[in-house]
Length: 611
Image (cartoon, rainbow, N blue to C red; front, side):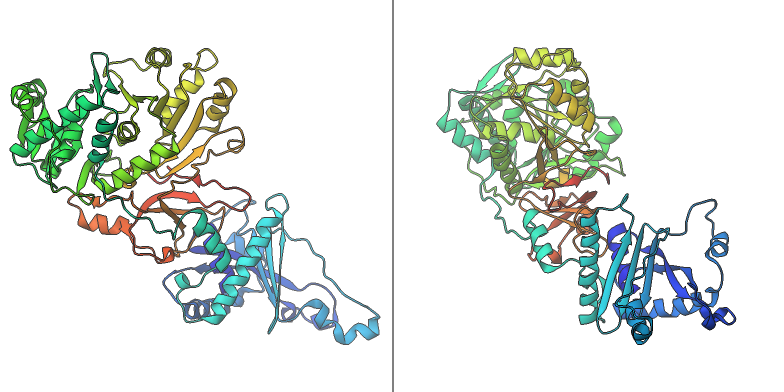
């Protein structure tokens, strides 16, 4: 009974377990020994699971509680239910449990020669959707009767296997805590770990992100790196401008771990500023010009930036601060006098590259610190997964205050492609968006899922730009109907990728190519992990959830953030070690629910559920 309660807790994610258990009531009936018939009753069993307690403690409590429950075994189940808050036809439980020390066939052995029977089998019907029966003492016979309308045969086989594993584990170590009693066989644990890269060891890159730009500048100096409505900038010019910004900041005292807030309009000029900050050793804190004053004040007070890069008109919008202002319009003569060669600094891959503040939907906005190594790791992986080539033209759509901008900017420039900066005031109607992409010959667009939904709804009357070959979506769960509509009207040459990833794990950690075969379900998958990402899906026992059963998604590997700025307690709470992973690496607790792939499918489900 205790093992069954543990298993149900693993499968339901609940610690308050209720099921029905059968008990013989023949001794309550006068002369029942002389009569035939089924003298049993069903009693509700409520078991509260504490993953930290030992199996011995749990079983002892169950035994004591069962003795109390059996005082009411003569009461019909209908009367017991009448005492509960449940009314009408709703049952106390649809799951039942029964234990007999011997099977009916064994019990009838002494009478078989009299009856002339070869074998006896009991066939019965119950209102249960699942009924577990255990028979025997030294050797157990375990069976499940189930509703074919609600469970597949493979699911029941899986449950039986997990019950057997848990039973054997408990028998081998009865004093173990419930967190240390597995329900998954070792082979299944290993298969899930291999699929999710849980135990793989990934090295963090030693290079900084701006070094990748310097390489492109030396290889392709005349290739157009940036474009907006007013100017185009080559890779050579981009690197030179970034060097001047970096050297100017160094002249003001810039150094690794110092912070620079960026408060600028979205134009091609903002990209050299970002790289210049990184070259100076500092990290950048992007803030959108439309940022509410309350949020801006919070960021200034929390981050305490050492510098603010902006222009004179926008400086007036910033509350009083001790940060040194760097005004691109006022300081232009000084910037232009700076050398254009690459500066030498002490910045390493372990230094902070940027700090992005969360939305604050669950409290005050939190600053997430991403290091150079994490950014470089993501950039290289994303470039490979998205197959970005030098002849690609990538749309820079997102505000730099969102980490989606990181996915647009750095992989594009690492691959030697052209980054096209969307004008700040461009109307974002589907008609104008498609027209703009066609005019600029955009090949890759990285879009918020909500905005992509709007585009998908208009495809019957809109033509997808001819050069567009890849659309990346992310930020929330995608609607299966919109995915189906997209495939019905968009050209087959356009690759559609669904991504998932919290800010704390450097933009994206899973991807799914959404073709016709992957969307024939009620839920759009978030796919499989990036090649350099560790994932695990754990339940409240801190064990891997059974395939198809939701658990909390944990993310580890080189892309995992350093933590939250100025919040050591929260960092310790959310960035944790995972014993199941078998390695000394930090995992981020996403609070998002997901389920691991089964043998029948290879895609993760869920994500975007907890936040």
